[in-house]
Length: 207
Ligand SMILES: Nc1ncnc2c1ncn2[C@@H]1O[C@H](COP(=O)(O)OP(=O)(O)OP(=O)(O)O)[C@@H](O)[C@H]1O
Ligand SMILES: Nc1nc2c(c(=O)[nH]1)N=C(CO)CN2
Ligand SMILES: [Mg+2]
Picture 1 (cartoon, protein in one colour):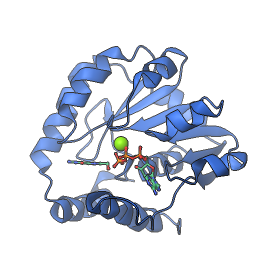
Picture 2: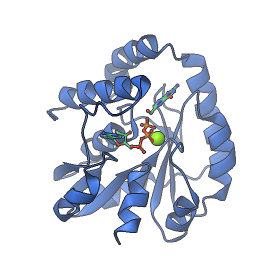
Picture 3: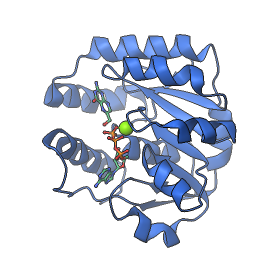
Picture 4: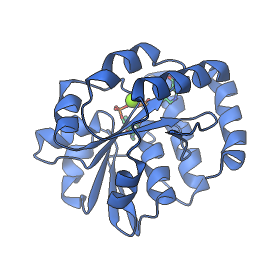
């Protein structure tokens, strides 16, 4: 999605949560610095273009849905750890690092592409984890893109993975481990799942 098309949704999200655009922009610049020019978007695209792609969210239902996983596997944040526990190594992990553990470092070492998202509320996590990730890296922002910091559209880790799959030309996108009506989460998370549904609807996914 072009930033001009994304921006009105982004502005509405900032207003809804009271997030600061300037803080998102500062985080994107910091991530660009921490990445030292690393940008493996070509590798991510090769995993996705013309392929069947499964995006795994971290709803409690994920373990029961693993038999539906097919093709290239994109994990949303802590869904990566659930996959690893069930013997599946994701091809890429979309994360703002609030679900990061040493498992992410192991995955990175094994070649999983870490698609790391910068925003105004994860600056300490960026400083901690990005230097520890030895493998392929793609940096993302929800604000205006920079030369090696991409914006494929989307907001939460899960819907951003679906937006990236769409933008990078997946032949088919299968979505598992998404329960966007989950009531068993705190109010902010409920708001985030609300936005995930709105944004996915925009690009033709009704969940
Ligand atoms: N019921 C659900 N509970 C949690 N995550 C869900 C659910 N359904 C879908 N997801 C997707 O799975 C992603 C990863 O979930 P995780 O529990 O790691 O959340 P998170 O890292 O706190 O998410 P975010 O950072 O995007 O707020 C979420 O970003 C969301 O897009
Ligand atoms: N500023 C800010 N941006 C975000 C946040 C967040 O907590 N703060 N959480 C996200 C994933 O849910 C995505 N973007
Ligand atoms: Mg997260």
